[in-house]
Length: 394
View 1 (cartoon, rainbow, N blue to C red):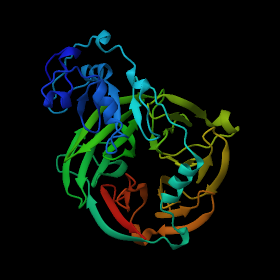
View 2: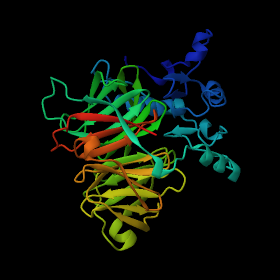
View 3: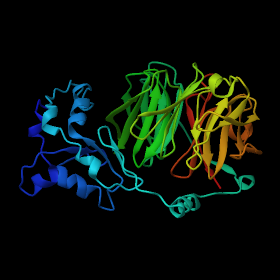
């Protein structure tokens, strides 16, 4: 990308109409530059009303500090902030699901009780006692060129692709729905967690005290050039549609970020509830109540707390590691017990979804995908440490 001033960045829809109008924003979903009128129109179209826009000046500033992933050459972009000194996005009427990153205030219209109830009833719920898992696939995530042993620290289904966090090799690996390897992306920081955000977008966190946003585009993983700072090493992350819930394992704390990456709350367990529950490596946040569920492997159980940090219940389990939600029920990976447990959101133990005979190893990370399939990875000391098992759940 050549060096350019903001004035040389033109609105792409206007340019197609033969007009040279300066762009004011960048859309992450469309990867398109938009002027002020086109930005407003973009957010009013049904197909793009919930897209993510960023002020162009801040998007260009991100480019100046990142390497272009397609060329691996440093991007040089001269930005004059005065050229885009406008907060016009604050005047745009937004829907509940519309988010503008960095430099735009989120204006959420009043949400009626009816709409919230409709949102809850549309989420698929199932009787936890009737849930059954059946293996449909298993594939290796080890590449011949990997320099180190594979150590999976997160697995996720995004846009009909499977993203795997390989901690030891410090990369994101991309596979298709059949488990065929497609590509990889080197990571700047060691990475410990991954979470679905929306559409083809996902977030990662790790030792760099940073939350990164990514997009699966075709057969590659592309950086969104958006990152959110947290003040401690991160070891687990979950986005519930409203908040990013980031786990700090070694510091026994949790950071809550809003949709734009601004810190909402910091929960330090000893201060929050007068007792130290030593956290594990994964975390889940309910989309309706914002309650937080944390596997505590050293404490041998799963802790539920409010967003304020108040402990609600603790359900004993041998060695809980990963956690996900399957149709309204919590699914917890038990590494030592080599099984997947089911727990209600009220802390009632239901039973085992899968046992050692089904899994064949000690599960570590687990994620129920947007495709309705359950993805399971295994402990780094297990003989299945480089495998991903996939199950249908009915």
